[in-house]
Image (cartoon, rainbow over all chains, first blue to last red; front, side, top):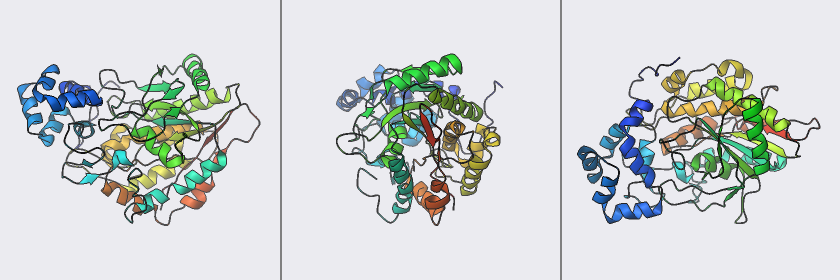
Length: 107
Length: 294
């Protein structure tokens, strides 16, 4: 049909438009699937972020661990999952935006 | 929850107990190979190149690192010979132009159902497995109809395999749920019940469902349900079936899922009505439902 889904209230539809917008952050989060890259992030966040061409606004969201803002920028879909890769929590101890511990991967 | 040994806590027990009949059924069936229809959540595939359909064609599959280290699970042993046959049959005969993966790290979309269905020791899984990945996160997604037809093709491909493997196809993915936006935690039990009914008795009609309807009525991530239709498509020639589902995404989801499961037909009708091909044929293919109807 060649057209996007219609907007759904209180829901983001992660299509190619949102994916382009979140590209830099998504690439950064994808890199965090490697232990070496996680160490690199922990060692020097600023250098790490600069590798992915993040805008200053995106960098600031990460510095402040502003997950709500990051999700808005990142575009939804798996943003929450991806962003939890940012070193903050112990392995498998995962929290949603309200701070509740959630299961998911640990199932 | 499994890794932390919490499956028998009151909040979780009903959810995990629902998998017992599936596990037992699979143990009786003792398949040689499980084809697991699942989606990758950017553990291995990423949005730089995200395949619509991807088939594992490797001898083995690593446990993926989803950003938190790897889970303590045994490496997955594949069946490269069957995979190769499937790839050639699906691409040449059925014109499903899959991405074929010589290397593929599997992640929770694959491992959670595997872990719940197949008890395993340190020595490894009791079954070989072939990952069949479907894009359900990066729109445009394949249509539900396309997923259903992939099931038809998959069945024909398995049946034409000259080997003598017993194959089970597992459909995976969560039912109603949403993990983002203001509707975080949204679920719709009525939709789930309807979907299960339709899956069983009207898969042709159900295959016409649009992503829009699923996402509006059941939450953004419920669109994973289109993967159930691939499993159902495998079994289109017979009446009853099933999927192994349930990536409970939060406590809330799990509680709701658990409430769905109380007093269900799970241990009788649903689990009692698996379809096994009994006609002599080179490869048996089986589908099964872990029915969560109340």
